[in-house]
Image (cartoon, rainbow, N blue to C red; front, side, top):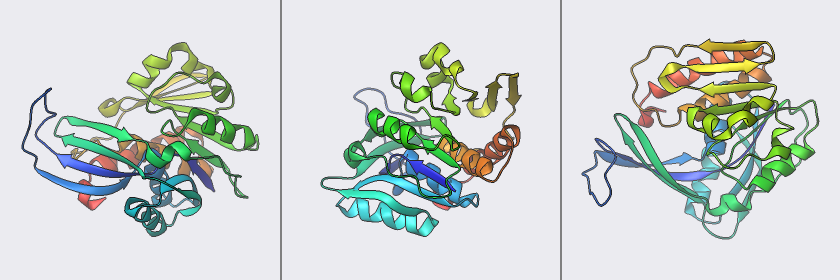
Length: 263
């Protein structure tokens, strides 16, 4: 079983030919409102890969919060650890273009996310950086040592040495890896995602590159979350790290090849 502790956001997605310049207004190609947040996306991705998943986090007492809880239910994710708090749920606005995407995130209720007791049978825990640093640290402290802790250190922020010392697997993209510097190499297993370049895995025995599967890309938005969720699911199922990374690559490739409306 997997415990995902992280953010839950109600996302506004806008399609546009490109990102606007400062003070520029562009005509969009469409808009949609969707379930999101790194924590939520990763929990759903793991569930879609066949894992039993429990989610911990926070939503607001608003319509967005109700939509987020309903989406977790539809995905088969146990949401017993998701608190409903006063105020607004987290949200984001993302502009999705042919070349990539940009987004602005408002934390909302995610600032009130608190660590929860790990349900019985947890083998893998997955955290990100869209909830308070202290909350991630508290969860890491309470986890049994035999639980594999994956930290997707996104979005990038100052390295928490106490948290890093408990992490078994660190997943970062190129930007996050550069910002973390040598600290990223302190973990037993480092996975650096490289977009269309695949990913690189480093451990005590050396480094290995995994090419990205060739697909026609519909949208890169959510690729990293799909990768992390699938990685956790594969490890929970007993896969060795190399096999887990390969499965995660395949799932992320299928995700970016699928239009958002069909995901």
